[in-house]
Image (cartoon, rainbow, N blue to C red; front, top):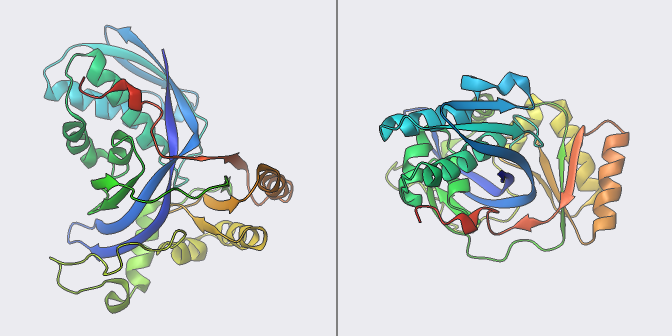
Length: 290
């Protein structure tokens, strides 16, 4: 059977604390996009993961590591054969690897008869990647903590058409956050110095706000040039997550597709997608734990 592993974007991202562990507390929100990797999953005696990008075959793949740990935790010897057709770029701020792992875990949870609850799966998966829980949550969400404290996104998603544009280079998430730590003033970046109360006073940052954008632009001229061009053709454009994909909103598909063609022709992007934001994960009907 074939299963979707959709892209996500951050509607906004605010850093609210830097923890001793090196992780960062965030105030952010996630929505899905109607473009996805595709996983073909079949019953098997052993666990195997192959990928259209050979660099991500086998134990190197996050989906393999998550499922192997899951079956060890539950004392299982069952396997699955998984092939991932990669349609999302790597290190792009779209959560591709995390989405693959979340989809594989949802399927394995039901196929192997474990039937963990959604909350149990999110708790199990969070140490493998802070983005995995947002896919297991299955709905557009607000996120606190390091991204694992999720609740329903309470407002309507932006209407119109969304353009995703990847500049052809990825960014290292740790490198972007390290840059932010070096440049940010705690008095400006955080609401309070008290680590027990670090969430900003404003509960609803504006869509498009991203505390990591300036650092990403300073680390990558490609990201900087892409954002500048998107802002010249769209009233709302921003970077997703720690980059390097940028997002722009348009009222109609024609304008979005014209912008995508222009970016590709000028070499400012090597991958684009024009589509819609989704409030629900494509696999929500799977009913985790049922």
